[in-house]
Image (cartoon, rainbow, N blue to C red; front, side):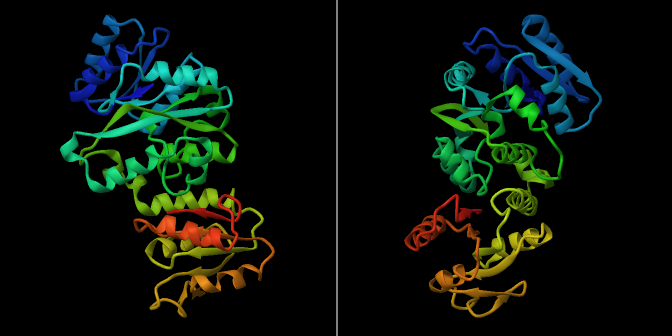
Length: 331
């Protein structure tokens, strides 16, 4: 179910999909009221390849387009791809075969590389390195509140599972991350093939750089919303490790969700002894004492600095706290 964004790469995208080695598939294209040559190009491709189906509609935005395409898909598996990315010829075959042989898995991704090489910025490459290292369901679920672990353009999923979860929804934050978080709370299983089968185009006009839904604040809103409906349910104290910008802004969003904030943990001596949003800031050595004050506390590690996640993980493990039960990384 490709979603086309740019006419200059439309032929490349359709060529990439048409040469997939898997025979039994169709390409559903939602023509969302374009004003360039997209509609003409799609009609020409549909005449050349009978597997291409076109749904033409007035412009209504990406979420409505995604749901419209999902509604008319007939196959049990749906693969996403954006028009300006590149798929390896065997991608669909590999992912469909994986879902066939792993009936417990609902969404499968693959390893992804950024291109063109000279334009891939350091932050984007760090993100790709992180997500490419999350191969198993347990890896993806463990770090799902850090960032979106599955590039939308790289996944194949079971159509009925996504429909049962409510399809794509618009809360003002990234629609794909929202879907993964809803599926996570519903108990869905994820996987990533340890094969590089998708190339994700890096450019200044990518939606993740230009659309306000992908701002840090909206990511934090999404995290707070689903944390409050998942890991924080029944908790009587939320301890945020990290009194910096990310921790402070996440705390604001969690308070809006009614979460019981208790204390911040930080290693910065300039912050220790002060308060954030009316809550004390303590050093890591004081965490065990604060932990025992409550019946069912939880720690959220909200430090985004490189290397911080591993250091915090080791310190929390050292005091006997279990990741995914007692604490979660959220940055």
